[in-house]
Length: 173
Image (tube, rainbow, N blue to C red; front, side, top):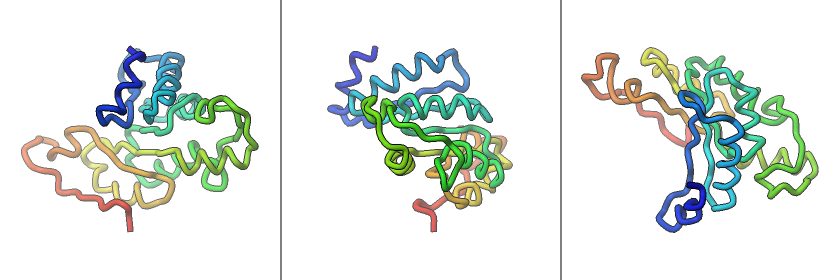
């Protein structure tokens, strides 16, 4: 299937979503797909299970340019997410050079940190419905590039009978 990736940008596709949360996709397979996507000019984005920071950093170290962490329901959880996935001074990730994002070529740690900080996108997935009200604080603490939610959280109230009243301006003021 990865052989078709080079055709994706020609039809307007810019990114590829690798979902490691609910299914059987392994880090090994997801990393291989992410590297192939990078080579085809696509932006690989991975979703990992809540609190799996080791898996998240491994995906970011092995090709993913974006990360979605589900069940980030408070500003404190968002702050922890940023600290685990961002490089200093915003976070505590360690830096080394020869990553797939650089074609495997070694680079100085400072250059790697600056470039990866600039290019990595982190999204907090807000679940359950009660946490949607926290979305502005989750997004507004710095280091979070976007907030998303599950269908029931963003489409309607817990009974899914009405539209979601939440609108979050981007960029955040």
